[in-house]
Image 1 (cartoon, one colour):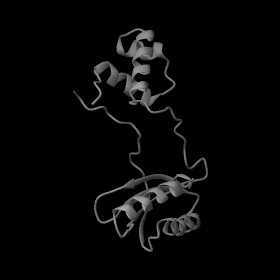
Image 2 (image 1 turned 180 degrees about the vertical axis):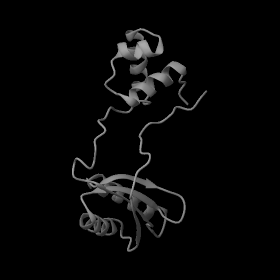
Image 3 (image 1 turned 60 degrees about the horizontal axis):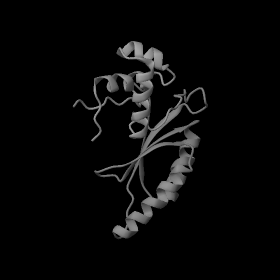
Image 4 (image 1 turned 180 degrees about the horizontal axis):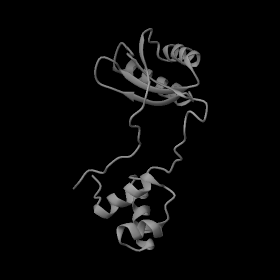
Amino acid sequence: NIMIDAIDRKILELLQNDARATNAVIGKAVGITASSVFERVKKLERKGVIKRYIAVVDPELLGKPLAAFIRLTVESKNDRSFEATYRRIQEAFMAEPDIVECHSVAGAESLIIKVRVAGPKRLEELIARIRDMTGSPHSVTNVVLSTYKEASYVEPAAE
């Protein structure tokens, strides 16, 4: 477990809200120098707490207004087959631009997949491709009507 103090937590909060914030702006907000912010951020990057910096884009403006969650069960005959199947699925999903997220889950289904597509026809085509990729003949799809909260922000656990 990585030790993160209150200053690191505040720096992470500020960077998650604006990754382009300068060290000087962050330093002023947390009460330390810009060079101290630089050192702390570098340390958080080295330890893997900060994985990368991204731009959050508006999917609707990029022609993908329809979001959906696809739940499906992947079956295999044994543990070795299961691992090989999941590796194959991971590789296929990584190459599929309409798949935004994929989670292996406990429960009735094996996978929950978040997708972003241009419309219902593209969703139908994607579902067929996902079924082919996974060998799963059955899936349950929930189309998103409205989104009230969607964030990549993670609050660090308190010490």
